[in-house]
Length: 338
Picture 1 (spheres, rainbow, N blue to C red):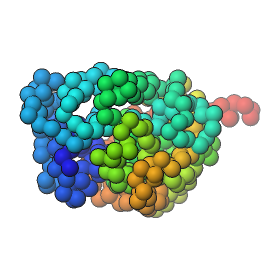
Picture 2: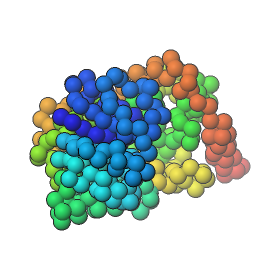
Picture 3: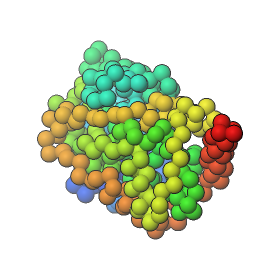
């Protein structure tokens, strides 16, 4: 199979890239070359900026693919470009959407592919919905062979999966834990969440590639394991060898007092309980099973980050903000109890 990925080095796509190359696929990657040093041998690099449509068109002029997948399309204009570039050049076009596009808040915590798409809290999600609408129209009216994939919270060895963190990554939360500082958990920490290791995601994704039953379909790919945010943070602290000092703060309060987009990422996503029904991906890819348990995956991630100082990015601004939020809550409690 001959495949082309737009991207190929991100959290989701890097694991797919590795597994495809291990399995002997003919894989081409269009990217700007910033993270290609980490790629395993065997990938054919088309170094270009996908936004330079004329350059990319000239580079792929005589090429045809079994599968093209875009991992970095976030708005309809990106897919309009992809359609111009790959119409007639691929047997399947895969778009990476998002499970955050599902109805928020949910009318039923059990999420299937037929759950309505609606998210008034997050522009990112609304743009993904608009992308899906555009592609479905191309499929229905033009026969463009699309497959839509909806991941939820997918993680790898380079980033700790968290609910509340700053703009410079997730290390500062781990650092606070190791310094015995209080750590913010949104809400009361009891809402259910689903995290999927990228190597598990990759197994299901590869099963959709070249799959005739996936054409015209929308498919979610997640683990079947549902855990609370309290459990997630406890596992992180335990992996670091420290005791968790948690402070629970409402998502609405966090959104109101931060420059980060917590309205979108919390109110429009992580503050809601979600349990995914994965019957569809298992029907399309019968041998798919997510085998990395949350606590096992997080321990691997913590060990990897501790062994790679370059991933330990300090975020002083986020650290100061956490102290301010916790201080404000303490002051409010004191004022009320006077």
